Length: 231
Image (cartoon, rainbow, N blue to C red):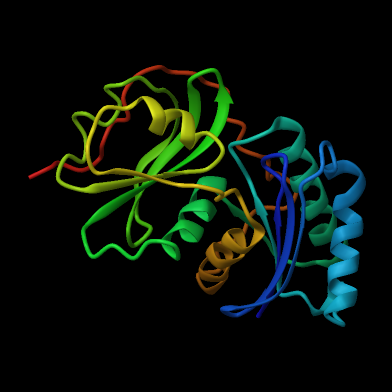
């Protein structure tokens, strides 16, 4: 199983190829507005470097949001074009889930913990969701306007890890012990690819003709609502 994974939800344009659980190669471009002009080139260069062709791919996985409208549109359009033109399955992966998978590899805590990937939106707003240490989704993706009381009532018996380009501003203002910040962790095609491998095993594919990004246009302020009951 060979997966081409694309992550374009933020300013970083990331392309990776995975074979089963092994990462064969990756290209990251952290260039302003590089997605439209560099994504196709990065895909071609990585496949050539690995001596692969489009016909060798088992599926194409793409980050479906939330994130930048332009970045998501370019990534999804590119993935759909490859899949449609070559009759290859398309796998959509939530951006935040891919980030959560990445973060798990950095955490060595023996305690029970919750992962909060955060994508910067504006001012004190972020796009976020919550995942258990086993990457079970605990909260639906939602906009959050953070203040000092964020997380004061939720997950009080668990460690909380914040990461992503929106996490530092939240970490700096909240008033609660047991909250940690993982610096430098951004959306990455490897996280998308790892989630996609499991989706491929379950034949969890998108309809190429009708698949659209998840832009998350609704805005709601407040504390995250837990789907778990602390006890």
